[in-house]
Length: 165
Image (cartoon, rainbow, N blue to C red; front, side):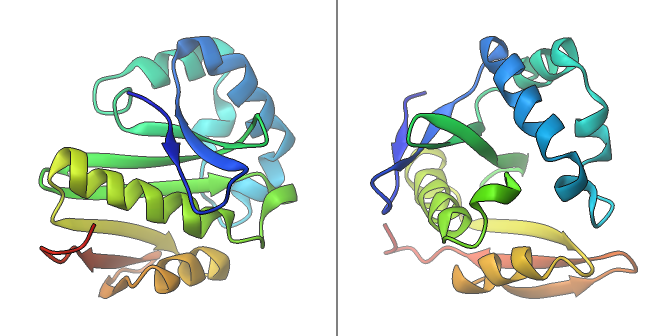
């Protein structure tokens, strides 16, 4: 895996490995309150460095998870979830200090383009916990639409057009 550029020159998506566990764990620890505000990421914030390293090396995670790098520092994650290729789930989060700048939108836009080109993705799904309005806004900017409502979250879907790059 190699780095993926985005429309924001100072932002790129970088492959993560067990060697990055300490850095990622520090970002998670610093953003614990932000990440768990809506009841999300409880498992992630509970991991120690060894747990993060193990997570990053799991099949289905290792080849589909990228660090969001802003000016050389990891500030979040974007990932594909190969549940039923060519249909993929996705996930993303950023450090609170860098939200509201379009970084999540552009990081996900680049990841989706990569999914289509490199993995033949035809559909991308995302689940968003009720009340997570910034995450919903990211998906709406990317063209996702609501596909199903559940008691605690809403599922969104993006059909990738055959001619889209």
